[in-house]
Amino acid sequence: MRRHTEPIDVYRALVSALADNVLPTAAIGAIFAGIGLYTYSKTGAAVAIGITVVGIMATALKILLIRFHRRAMVVRPSSDAAVKRFELGHAITTWCMAGPVGALCALLFSLPALQLHVVGTALLFGYCAGVATRISARPLIAMSAVTIAAVPAIASALIFLQDARLLIIAVFALFLLIALETIWHIYGNDRRLITMRLQMANLARLDPLTSLQNRLGLREAFDALPHGNNGLIAVHAFDLDGFKAVNDQFGHATGDILLKAIAERLQQLVGQNYAAARVGGDEFVVLQPVSDRQSDAGALAGNIHRQLTEPYDVGTGRPITLGLSLGFSIAPLSTASLNALMREADAASYEIKRNGGGFQPHPSPSRASAKLGPFVEPK
Image (tube, rainbow, N blue to C red):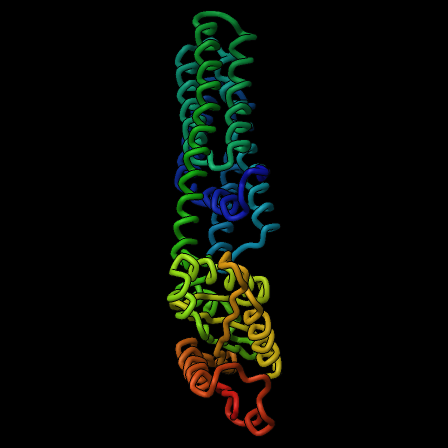
């Protein structure tokens, strides 16, 4: 039931909000059970007991689903398919609770005792108000639940039209319309707040100029890797050779345009499989999980050097070509330290810069069998 205008991360956050309703659900279930038993004590109608039992079972099922949903969110991030299944489960259990509420209210308004009408009104208003405020994050579920609960009461009062029931019908119909509008309004506010929160969290992890990750984003990408695996992790660190001259000759505005162009080319090169970050003025880092071959890191280093040193057209009248000095370090993923890998890659990069720039295309056989670490282009 995801709306086409909802970004997937916003949708996931809205669905997760459905797992915060244990106490309200339990309270509504307890009130419903009490009113059901009260109705049976006053009328002796077996149908009241039947409706009450169904409502209690639906409440218990809803609470179990909420607890399972909360536990699943703690254990691991849910897939998109799992999020949709949880949303469907919440919809079904919510409707299963709304049905007995509507049925019990319809029964109460079919009886002549006015005190039962008051009880039915309190139940209906309490349930609908709770739904409107607690599950409006998914408006279709909330709106349908309110409708399922309210329409039977309105129909019953219309069928057994006497006393003040015509006024009750008018009040319930107006209340239903207000409740539907309230649900949509709350949903809109929730969506805007979640979108803003996610945008701010995203901005905190991105470099504002290039939209690459910053140091925080790089750290989180490293921490998210499966460190129990037997693979390797490579960290590539490089800075630009000749970038200061560009700033001096053409100005910082042109330098910023050039950095953006470099970042776009780098992001296209590494895609979504690797994390690319800008960690300083003209300093960049790429995080590369590899299988078990150090040559994979050398191949990526070669691609980075080859593509990022191609000319850039940034509106200066002639293409600008930069060099770069790239060093990388490798360690087993199970024992890797990001700080140590970055220090080693930085040291390799600086050594390469002192020796004229470039990168280390492939480790030598002796280095390949030695302790994994930074590779510096030999001269």
